[in-house]
Amino acid sequence: MLLELQEMLIPIFQYVHQSGILEKPIVEGDFISHKELVEVLKKRDADAYRKAIRIHLNNHFARILA
Image (cartoon, rainbow, N blue to C red; front, side):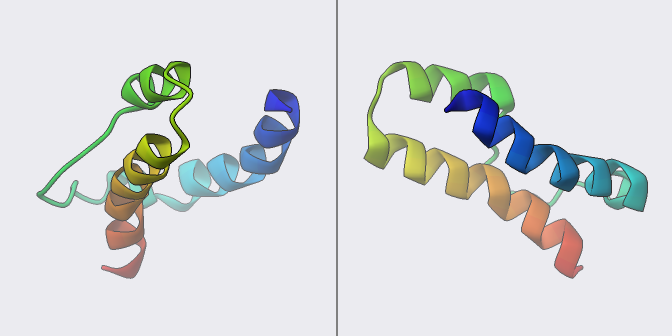
């Protein structure tokens, strides 16, 4: 299941890295790192992960829409 998730996300990551989006400044506010996401996953709490991934992705969405 994890491999399927990675296969789905790799094209998105490639686009993000090639597009220059990461060169835009980080939007102020809450931020959840990949390491923190892994820690939430280890707890096996779907609601906590849902909240954490939303916070994590909000910064990326803000960069795209800026």
